[in-house]
Image 1 (cartoon, rainbow, N blue to C red):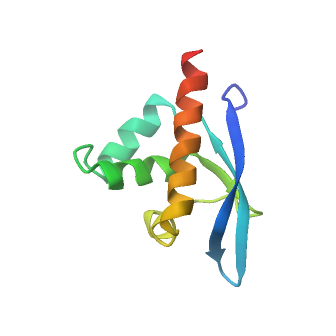
Image 2 (tube, one colour):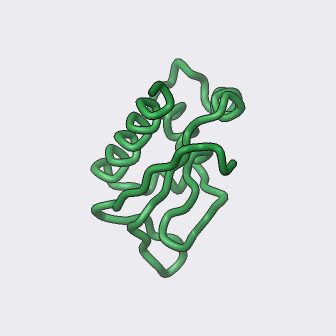
Length: 98
């Protein structure tokens, strides 16, 4: 997916995977397939879960972990970190419209 834009950032509290807590993240632009897959996993009328399902597809990496990511992993995030990932999603949406 080299043709897709990405944004990077840092989580405030991090995501614990195994024994390690990861802070740096990279998120890529959505594809239409991501939308289809997220809707299959979580109905679009359940906005919070649907957006989390999108994140599981858009996350390229968190720290040294490159996936796959799950809803359970997103669910472990502190609200401030979830908000940071949602902000990154919005940044990518804006880049895609440029």
